[in-house]
Length: 93
Image 1 (tube, rainbow, N blue to C red):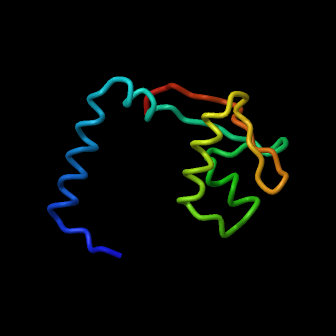
Image 2: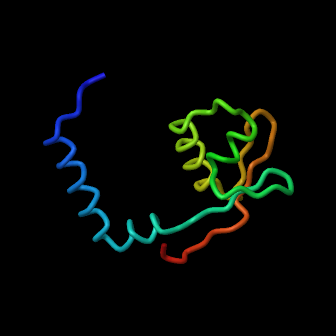
C-alpha cells in the first residue's frame, strides 16, 4: 500500500472542506438513515450488517449502503435477509 504523505493528507482535507460549501453535497451528508432487519432497528447500515456477519468489512458496508439508498424501494437483501431503510432524518447534526 502506498504511503500517504502529509501534503496528500492536507490536499484531501482541503478538498473535503471545500466540498461542504456545495449545498447539495452538504444536504446529502447531513442525512441520517435508520435501517431495520425484521423488527430490529439499527442506527447504521454497518451495525445492521455486522449483526448478520460479525466480520463484515466497513468498506463493503459503504458499498452496500450506497446501493440500499439508491434502490427505489429502499430495500436490499444480504444472504437472503432483507435490510430496509425505515427513517431518513434530514436534521442537521
